[in-house]
Image (cartoon, rainbow, N blue to C red):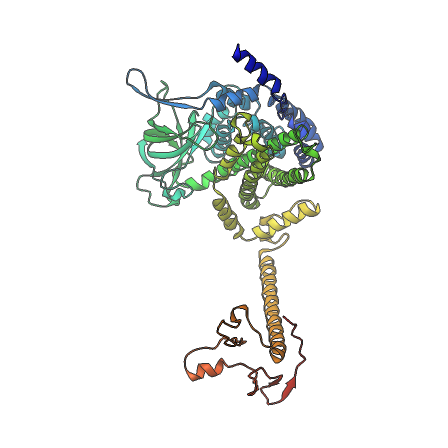
Length: 591
């Protein structure tokens, strides 16, 4: 009886208020920044043909995909090393919901679109537009798809035979394969020159791989590309080769692979990431032995843009939720949208988001143009790592601010909001950290003509003057020649240095003039030279520090202006080197 009375009392006294949760919507319709960017960068006919793809993915991401992503995030992968009968199986159990998200991405053509080539050199922009809409509800299922996309490009560029065997499977929309990308080792990380995996020739074009890959995403993939050092090839990155391996034998057992453990990561919880031992893993060399790192470069271009667009989608998805919440949440008697501080806060994030969209889709367009032989590959060496570095870093800042805009709800796991920040942070590390990206940009800028082409491209986009001057044209003399560019650069640098020298001389003259005027009329007493408690007079300040040592050095350090013997103060007269006396006006302000 008492319990019923207490429960009724609590119900009567409890505040019935319930906060409405933020609701996502079709970003292709609601996100004006994304839509305007796609409409601006795509020709009208391409935008019209691709709009149904964008709209369908925007709707799809609101329905089945959101439920699948939530289930996959709450059921992370599990490593089962040994079965019930003691056999080593190294089974990785991944939630079926995550595998279904991968399949949805394949069916939507997230890998196939650029190779079907329906939209020509704009296929990459269309592809990444669909990825942008798909990604927030994907539970990081884009990781194996990005590496599959990159593997296809490498095979098409480097090995015709392997491309015929695997590209149709990797670019299919139904029953498609996926690929991994195994580069990271304990010794190396970003320093791939320290790769320790050894490749031994097994005959008939086959090799066996021996070593440990410390961080391997997409361990559920069908194939993987891996760097290894052929036996006897020497040290350093130049000795590495690129290999293709299938993860499973025809009977379903591992291809000489043992799973050490699954990684427990800050974010991307639904994505299976493992530490693997390769012990006799059968593999084929891609494009023959050697040039492993140069062969990887096109792969990195693609995966870096995937990472940049993933960062964009994190900002765009979070911004959409924050705006919806600002229309529902009340504080201090007004909606959040009506509070000036909150509006400025969201406006700043929105401005960064717009700038990131311009940069991200510029890189996507440049990649598509390069694949159709109409773009500047040297310019891409600057733009793509710069894009990945800048957008990934701003994404961490933006998502941190966005979850803060929800107050305490942004810190509660079951709202799903903290995942925005955790998953965004991985893009700063994947495919090269911020410092590695910066070094890649600096390395690219050393090539003749590249700085001029990059600045011309920036100016063209800023002023709306059409395409940039290619770096090859610059080197060959069409546009700004390399020699003229160096002259202009060195001339600007020389003018800047001369200007700074003039400024320093002028400042020195002002200091001397002001010092002479001040010391003629009053004693400069620093704060630390005030009279002591003993009544001793304060120490007089000197314009130059007295040096210790020989009389010769002391004579050089004497004040330039003579003092009167009676007062010890600076004389209002200064003796010039020629013996003439010149009077100066006293303009030192009172302290």
